[in-house]
Image 1 (tube, rainbow, N blue to C red):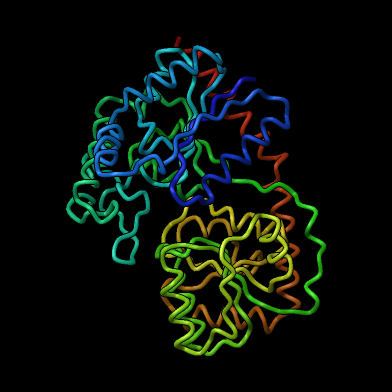
Image 2 (image 1 turned 180 degrees about the vertical axis):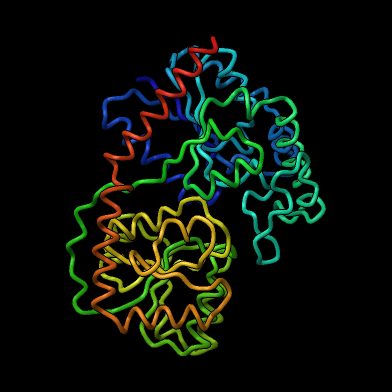
Length: 398
């Protein structure tokens, strides 16, 4: 099968970019011919570039022409769109539709339901725009990049393409990352019959047997930004005088403020900021940690970090919110805590540490769940079934 993948990279690489590369590698390993066509937000430089990108986010004729040319050259059997915003734009669907090539779209976030793509405002979950033809609340509050003008651009893009029927007619299959996300996107207006559920996967690594030489620690892996609940984690650790070392892997806009807070509280000897680490190093750290702490305060799509923890046999502590509650089974593969409740969060962590037999059993369970749900072999079968369904649907309509 010949596959054309479209992806708009963000300025700061994250889980979405890793998923694109992993799926490309998976497809190529199974003998498919894959072309990855990318845009990069680093290309948006000065104010003029920003203005041009804003207009192009609604409909980019240049991107449409570029994709048309690649389709003519490569003749793909299917086009898989991961992220079209902002430089590709929904115009790429028109290029595929005109060429009669089926389209699969992965829903990495909630962009088609929320201008910010993350249903979160003022530190709390917000659904004010979900299901509305015009996501006006997101514009009024300037949810995208704290700008009403830029939020208006996103709102115009989603509304225009609802009215044009782009989301219903020109995408043959959507990939939601959890049942929870699927239901939210149906609520947002996407056709239920086109939404398939396929979580992310993790390739098995050869680093899982490394020993930690007796060190015990808690682990956080993720972007250091508001939606990941990282300030809540630090507050919990300090307020409840936790004593087990905490390693924090990742980078982001809050890192400096977090490091300063930890130092001022006198906890810099226990809380260690490791910065960005490659996949192999992250898996080693996970294999040797007691718990992965995942205090995200928004719904999430499907955090690859949790799949990685399961692959490493590491139990996860999550809030009872969105897809996290669905992915992590309480007292089976990890623990749930009440969102915003530092006491409950601390209690759950301490309970796990003080029940090593149960913690060990949960670790074994996570590995079993990984093998049954999040392995590369199983994910490949699910992905191919979605592709074949999309191709059959397009052929029946032509």
